[in-house]
Length: 280
Picture 1 (cartoon, rainbow, N blue to C red):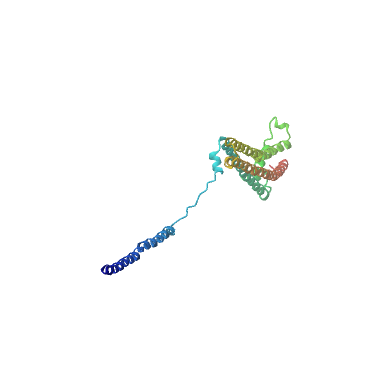
Picture 2 (cartoon, rainbow, N blue to C red):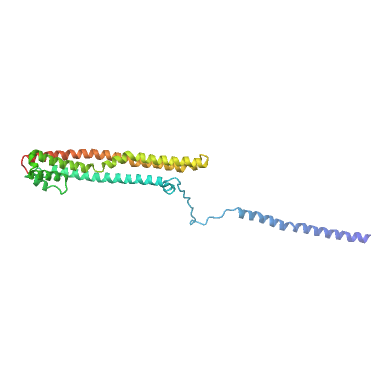
């Protein structure tokens, strides 16, 4: 008994020492695993660093599904035909306005040449006409009067007195010039009066498509009617854009024609009087 007690005390001390060693060594791997877990989480949560200045931001390009390109690509033959007609009307209007302005500029220049030049200082109308620019309207009037004065002959023309014959020739030349200035103005008037109605037709056609889309879909959603209504508004805008310049150009050209024709008629009356005085 005494021997057992003597051996039990060292054995218990040894077991206690082993248990203490085991308890102090076991948490080490757990602590290491716990310490490495937050580091891994931090690494995973950290955002990726930018590649550098070379990195570019892509811009999002938004296409307009209701613009002119969509109108042409998605519209039917009626919408395209209406748009083409208005484009032709607009191009014709601008062409006529520019050509008429150029003709009026040349006529005003010729009128200033007659007023400031040596026409009235010449010895005769024929010499004064020769001094004018070739193709000038004032030269055409003077030459017409001289020709009528020189060729007042024949059985039929002899029945008309010389005064009337020269006056008729000069007046005819003046009216030819006036008629030339009026060329194209009828087109401007037609475009100015009809272009809004052509655009209105396109508007009605677009609204018809909108109502058709509503009827097919069974609901008036914005995506069903936005395209046709946008088409209608574009047609209205095109009609106004074609008509307004045509009307304004027509009125402006008419006023300028009136101003320049006053100078032409005054010149023709003076030439008539000079020819009656015998100054060919």
